[in-house]
Length: 79
Image (cartoon, rainbow, N blue to C red; front, side, top):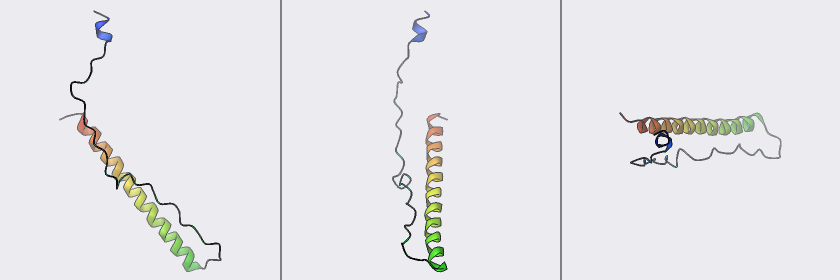
């Protein structure tokens, strides 16, 4: 009887785990490549704003992906 309780039983129904949208799994943009020339204040601000926008977009995608996985995993628990 003890040996019978040690055996594992396969799942009756294998759960279907959907993949997240490819939009959510895009890699983050690389930092802006600065030119080898001297930069004025406007150039620095422009490059900084591009990097900042890319960083915010990446953070939003990561947050959305995390939420997607939490929702999917919660649904596996049933009602």
